[in-house]
Image 1 (spheres, helix red, strand yellow):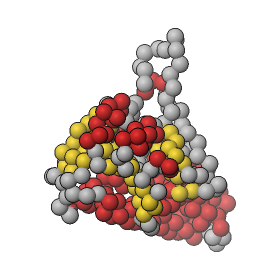
Image 2 (cartoon, rainbow, N blue to C red; image 1 turned 135 degrees about the vertical axis):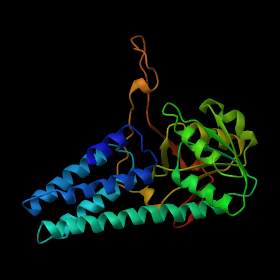
Image 3 (cartoon, helix red, strand yellow; image 1 turned 60 degrees about the horizontal axis):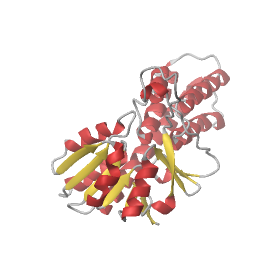
Image 4 (tube, rainbow, N blue to C red; image 1 turned 120 degrees about the vertical axis):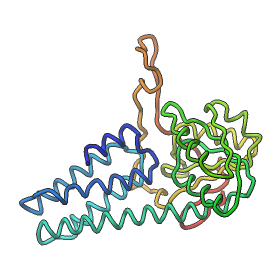
Length: 283
């Protein structure tokens, strides 16, 4: 399960950062079914597999913080035997999964209150927290028109469009990324998720920065929704991921170079607000 989860994260089959963190944490349960002779052997194996999961996506702050918490809980817990070490692992996994899911739910509830009935929204990429915020607002009776950019080259926005299109009261229009500036003048608010925020900078799926720039130019407020734990300090160094050129251009590209970064950097000065599970930051 661990190897499969690593491959899934690397291939972006799982891409929402909170979902990635939960799947990676849950994958470590596999180790509790294996046989180990000593606590030291178990902890070394736990650390090695956790590093593999973290390397699968070096940009997801929640993935790194939850994995570190699990490993440190076991390593610092001074377990008397392998059974006790496994018990600490299960407890830590259950705790971090509960914390991630609860934080996402609280952030989504706060985010839902930012969305006015009959708003025309614009969103980019796939964010399970943004999806949950819109779903909660719809359950409370709101209706929305939502423009969704398809988030090339992985087309993650298409999944968002399909999910949103399944809600009663939500009319969805899927757009190519380059059309965002054309449609923003019809929108009341841009709402996106977040990978992490470091040093007054939002790191999120590539295409967020030009969307934020266009929204600021046209006076459309932009709200970011995500867990407060994604505000990170020097303990986490964001590393962008350069994806395979084949995602952009399938044929051999002998005459040119293909650039395919996974994320971009958006100054917080371009945003209107950041909604987390703890508070709303008006910028």
